[in-house]
Image 1 (cartoon, helix red, strand yellow):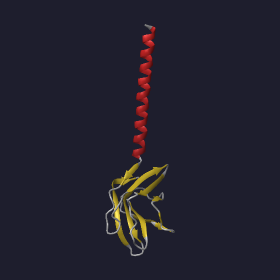
Image 2 (tube, one colour):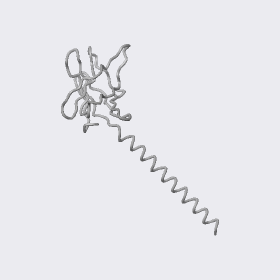
Image 3 (cartoon, rainbow, N blue to C red):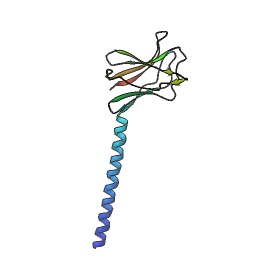
Length: 138
């Protein structure tokens, strides 16, 4: 009788532990996904592949181009951000020395949200393509 009670108690403890662990894993996975947002695909004359992902690292907002994004073959492509009020912010160059690419950019603190990410040719002053988010990301 006592032995049966101990076995049942052990089973309940194990079941409770398993459920608690599963809930913890689901919650942490949900929390990680809640801080990333992926845009619609880029559309435009020269920048028309890939997406951009917004993520947070502490208080920093970071935008990262997807691996399938192709840097436009233009003289001076840059990151350009449009916020929900229509303000436009020209940021870093996409290409850097040695054929390397700025695939991610940390947003300055004065940019409060992002509605669109544009690829802008600073030489020709032309929009090469843009990707928008379903809702402005903060």
